Image (spheres, rainbow, N blue to C red):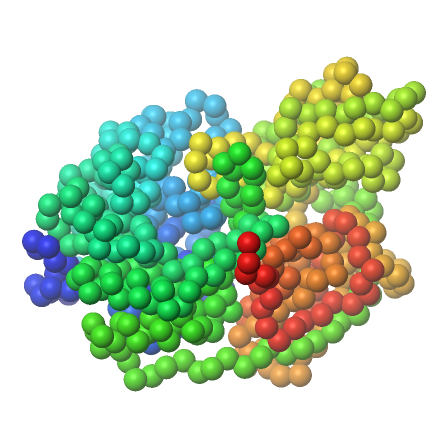
Length: 590
């Protein structure tokens, strides 16, 4: 067994000074069959440690429903890190930010308005305690003094940017220690006097999050903690992207120089990100600082390892810097080959209206309920009511979260988008069924809007009068059996797509799937929607960009009979689905 702790201004491993050279890999953003590959490449860059968050809502999507197999097998990820001879830093939250849906906090927790958010409120603390006991029960036996790789555990996350409830931080610290965690505990905040004062406790190691001006930032850290190792536990080497914006990149040369400055100062580091991965499914978060901005599917982050696991120029530049301060292995990753180019003809198109009644239970309410009130925490729902208008009238909501396509008798009449602050439109004269397809585009992951419910927020009026008598059907798209049955039975002619509709195509591979890291689904020419390959939810696509490909992990593929399903919300003249050789993440100029 080994020991790890803090002595003076150093981390110490088995009694000797130790510098942490870490890189962030979020296991929940990477296919589990790729975990070992990504960890091995981190070691090849010269790192000795892996860091990961643990998202609460990923593991407990419903109260008391704990997922820990397949993509959720955190224990397996820990074992893979250990088998690679690497150490591990665990950041279990309960809040993680990470551009992840709701910052990792489960939406179901806030159905009770009495529950506080990130504060020493009894209901919140009770739920967090149960969560931490569960996840730290996995971590505790894997600490370094018990033969595992875990050397640090973080308490909360960037708390000084949110609050200053030190009683709350103390409660989390006590729960963490009571769960058997004996390794040093840390906090992280941006190195400003206000955030550092608000976000930590004297007995926790204070670390910083920044990507430049290392000497200046380390000076601020030292001013707030006179002794202890200096560490940047989020060295930002890139950034994330929003839909409708540009693809963010940072200078390779400048990032390498900033890393060199940090290491020259004797500090430890966690590179955020070493490998970003992908916001598969409905897991992306959003920001709202006056304008709602949902995060894209790719979490490439312009990191040293690309979204698909390939070393970038930043990998080699960082490796060269690290070699000045620590040994790096002789082995290096192979240069990636282009992915196979493929085209698959669309053979079936099924309108949503043809299958909607089999995708979820309809709820009848006088007023519009939120999706949270119906226990639906991601994806889509249909809201409908009957109207009879003798003249055009204005339909108005208090708020739309986050996008609603509006139909009258199945004919589209408009779109209401939260990012444009749209909450009203004109409904033409007529009678019949008013239907709105509502999309939760990702919950806010940072700031005061964490925990807010989704859906159509009332009151709702039409022509100035209350509009009541709603039928709401959350759409269950976690399992596609109903959709697959419908597309199989549909007519074979497909002369374009008039959404919302499900689209199917098939393709075969010319090689064994194990020989390729993955594919890149080309979404250019399509409008907006979700894509699956062999039942695996790749995430969202949108013609507004910046990205125009979706990464398909190799382990979800098979040699023959691969099936693509698109849920296209808008329309497209495309009659085929294509795969291209490389990721297309968009233009890089603002």
